[in-house]
Image (cartoon, rainbow, N blue to C red; front, side, top):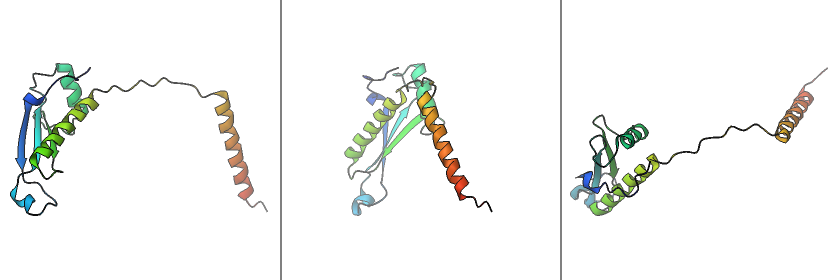
Length: 134
């Protein structure tokens, strides 16, 4: 499953508002905070399988209506925040489709078993020496 090469730009919706935090008068006057909305459920670019994977893996970031929201307010300019929001979106998409390697179960080696038993014996000896046997 791969989403490389898919350009989602046509399906982005942007909202801007006043950012919170430091920035002086800039914060009070200029709408620099950018919210990127992407409708996962009604996206024409994604297959049903891809939508399922995104809805499952990003369920904490997706609203009940199926809209993925990415917010950026770190920069002092709207353009900078827009670029960061788009970058974050693509990073999220790429993370969704990375498949983890399946773990191959292995047995502990003979040497590691012996080492473990030896350390248990040592600990046992140390604890025996702590006891006061009058």
